[in-house]
Length: 261
Image (tube, rainbow, N blue to C red):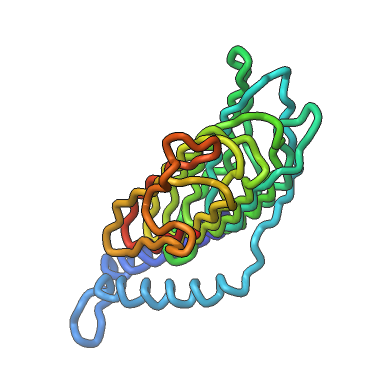
């Protein structure tokens, strides 16, 4: 937040100074008003700020957190993430639905609805994002889920790098939305589920465990969609409708590169 305040404070000082000089009758040698310098000075300042920001330390507030099951038999987990790295895997056990380490801080809520626990994870702060600079916070999350609990995942990843290993987990449904991101998901090896992805200028890799049937559909704009033809000669496995372990995949994207292997 302080970096954003410095930036906007500098812009206000620049505008005020140029306007004050104009009111005092100060002119440039070519006769133009001082305000004509606003955009050139601003662009030079932005360039300097971008270069300096590369070397400025990021805030690394680290928080450990866990969410208990509260007697729930299933769960719905919504995750919102931003600029940084995100890792999701099994590892929580016992009475915990999840636990993890959250650099950048965490805001989480858990509500029991019948025998289902509804959980929301999001960054602790809403940041003012200046496109050339990004946020002063680096979100680096490492989250472990309880593999024994059936759960649906709804993830809004934003612009980040994500690695999700769901191979040994009881996932019933996956929804993924991401922007300019790089995402690798190892899908569950057991059960039938739907994977619905909406990606922007992103690289998405979906790894299908051995013995899992799939049906894959895609609507990709200025991007490409490919499958490992040695494993999946067709977009739908012959036994998809009857297989005990099957994944229905749908991907919608813009300038995206999508791989299924």
